[in-house]
Length: 395
Image 1 (cartoon, one colour):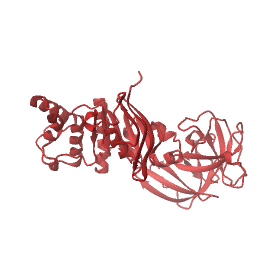
Image 2 (cartoon, rainbow, N blue to C red):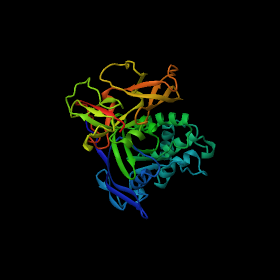
Image 3 (spheres, one colour):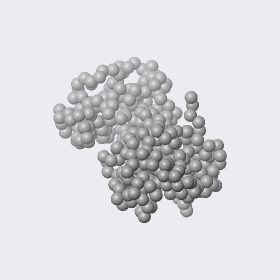
Image 4 (cartoon, helix red, strand yellow):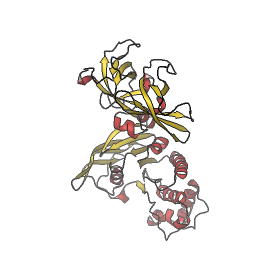
């Protein structure tokens, strides 16, 4: 059964003075969806959220909630609540008073307020903390109180403005799991904003990657990660390697064919069929043959130069030298400088592989399905799996 549309942004624009902050945003959000607006500081995430909440008025476009135009409505007339990064709790009120404040304004019966607040506290695992003040709570507990206060009236949409940003890494990761579980139990639509791509990938049903007031790509977390539409998305979401290349042969090229240049060759997926692209700056390929390809570091394989690549299959190789290694958690990150162009490419390996040495010459390889065409050479966001091309890259 297909989910129903709940919220729609149509051509939203916003200026602050001469600065154009939002540039014609279009977005559809479904009922019960957890969608994240992901992007760097200054890209327009918070402004978008404030326009949905009614705290800012757009210069152009419409906000539709449940099919109703709410663009000009005041915040209290929209079935929307917002959780701010600083939680915005009343310091002079207890936990239960903070949570029940909106119900008190609506003049609900005291017994109903007590029962509703108790249920909200149980939901966020804070039963027994009713009489405490915000300053007597930890950061994670204050975040839970802010969430309970927002969801106590069961809004159609809950807006979350980087609510985990002030927490330490361990607590933030635990709260990510709790927040996603809370959203699933409540069935409320969450619109979440963050600049942390790991956070977005962990929690979201769908991600909208923002850049300079526009949506660069929108799709499921897995799709945006595996099939980035542009080099910006590829780099921002997961830090992919991005290589320039020139297509140097037509579809139908034999799998074993090698490039003419000294830079090396590789395969990538393309709907047009099997082919090859060139890493050689002197190849003379026409401009329309130029492509940009993104490859995630975890899909790269390193083998001694002149050796046979592990994994077999349709792999060529780019030769280079190991510049350095760094450790992040249980991963080893290896940086290789490629021959010819001098570009650097990073491979992520699970565990600590001490067989790799700085200064060692290696061959970098990957399978065709793990190299994705980006930057407008194919339809943005389309899974390109119909066939292969081969490339010489690094021009």
